[in-house]
Amino acid sequence: MESGTEVLRVTAAIVSAFQTAADTLEVIQDRKGKKKRKKDKEVEELLEIKILHKSLVEVIGRSPNFLH
Image 1 (tube, rainbow, N blue to C red):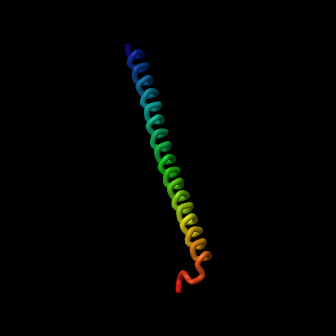
Image 2 (image 1 turned 180 degrees about the vertical axis):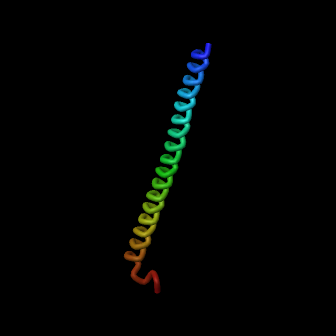
Image 3 (image 1 turned 90 degrees about the vertical axis):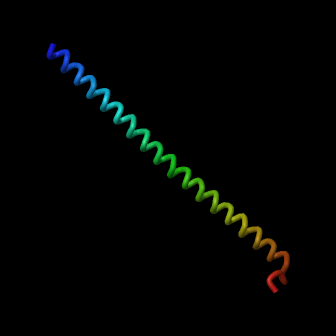
């Protein structure tokens, strides 16, 4: 019976190792997703600033006395 107990222990250790690996992979994927969302948000903000700047430059260009 002792070998049956060892088999159960080894099986439990293997299952535990796979579960730990799956949990670790989930954490890594979550962090990667957060970084990507943050980068996407930063790119979107930069595009919005660029569009705003372009609009302001166009308005000033059409109205030379705009600031006076």
